[in-house]
Amino acid sequence: MRPRPPLKGRGIFTGTGVIIAGLTATLVALLVPLWSYADRSGTGLSVLKAGTVTTPYGPLSALDRDFVTKVRLAGLWELPAGQQAQLKGTTQAVRTAGQHLVQGHTFLDARVRDVAAKLGLALPNEPNDQQKQWLATLDRAEGVDYDRQFANILRLAHGRVFSVVAEVRASTQNSLVRALADDANTTVLDHIRILEATGYVDFGALAQDMAAGSTPPATDFPAPPGPTADPGRAGRGS
Image 1 (tube, helix red, strand yellow):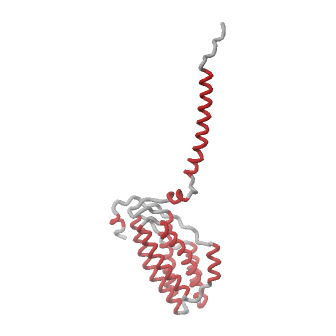
Image 2 (cartoon, rainbow, N blue to C red; image 1 turned 120 degrees about the vertical axis):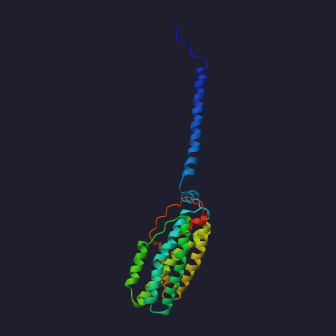
Image 3 (cartoon, one colour; image 1 turned 90 degrees about the vertical axis):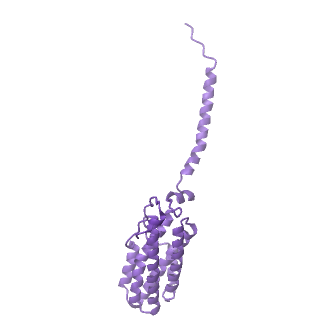
């Protein structure tokens, strides 16, 4: 038997298939980088959206939640430090600075607890490790050494918080966090000024510490809040 002659259209179909396959591969090669870039977590927009949740008061970002936590942490150690300074300070300026710390953080602590309750955020109940070390240093210090340690440790801590307050105030979309940042800004600036008025702040050492960026360990962000149906009820009972 003679072999069956090839179909006339077979070569055409084979050639068309190769062309389609080539075009498909080219299209995939073009789209993959776009998909990969869109999914990258390193872009500024994706970082902003990654930890942001919806609340009745506006979007709440990871930075917002970290700020609320830091305000609470500040009060947990600076308020007792202020109470101590009123007793151990050897000058009226140091004792006055302690009084300002007590008044300012009593006010801010009430504010941050109210904000956290409305946003459904958990707050820490004790200072972090760095803050405990600072309190231990102040406990051991006496006399003029105490005055100097108090002024410089507290001034360093307030300088670090001040930059966080500014960043949050400039970027937050949440009305409760924005108002808290306003209150924190006023309080922290007052404390910075009153600490500097003691005459013990070493600005040279302070500049070096701030430039070194030796900030306290980052705290864990509180868990994102769940949906809040009634904003008016969320803050009650706190």
